[in-house]
Image 1 (cartoon, rainbow, N blue to C red):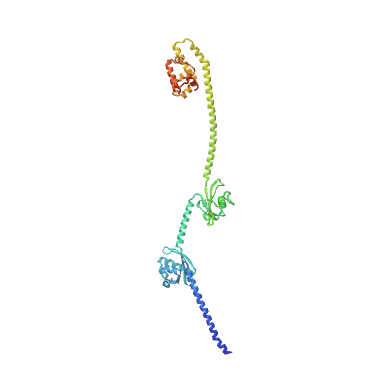
Image 2 (image 1 turned 135 degrees about the vertical axis):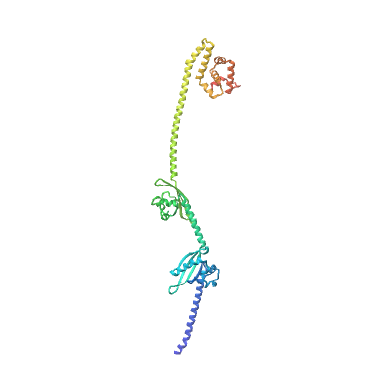
Length: 424
């Protein structure tokens, strides 16, 4: 029994040794795979990673970091990392490393060597006594991102300057009508800072309402999905021309809305003044029309009165004066008395005859003598009679008759001169 037990012990030790060897091989293989994975993880991103001791000696570095420093990994191991940077950069980085050494906590900072910007993270590795023995440094270049951010900031500043310069109230609101951003005209009207305006309901701080305004264009734009417009009247006789512009995502869904409100109170007041003035002018126009009508009636009445007076004078002269003149003409008169009588009769006819005035207005070319002869022709007087009354020769009267026919346009026509004159 004892001998058998002695013979089995070596065989059991060999098996245990084989088992330990297999476990060791597995551990080495696992460690190798772990190292390969870690190395792949370090070299996959475009960031550079380096492991240094407190003095800055490079203990390990990835391919990106080695390429950035212009050496191979084997050449860099054991070198001081500070030898590859300008003095001002070295001074700044040593200061950050000293902070990590002192605090024993990770540190993140932005580094800008030679015009390039890096987002740098330093992680301390502590020993069993809590002392920093190594530091892992990861640096991600953000130069392009920094330039984009600066361009965006400049663009935002320009946009803000433009919007703040506007006299219109411009604000960005969400779908619940809460203010996301407001320009200076809006915050000035609200008497609050831009930060205090954010998150406030626009209808509450601008219109002092608990619910949206009845004609709010934002409500209409949320429903229609289009740019909407409203003219709004607020308390205190303030009028606004209000637009709402939907801001949509790539799927066409409304995300936010831009609301632009312009104070048109002065314009509305001017329109009201203009309307009042127009009404006043209409009233004045009607009054003037009534006055003109009254004046026209008065003028017509005056003309009628004038005509009536002329007719009365004419009638009285013909009935009372002319018969007496005819009787005088029948008596024995000397040549001088006949001449005076002719002149008196002629002048009297000129005064009482509206025909002479009508004729002179229509035929301005007639001379006074032609007008007197035309009046006598109308009354039926013959050439010899007219010659005797006007103390002219019959031949002269005939010459005037021809002149009258020419001037009134009936010369060389078979038209009766008296008939034509009676029709005037």
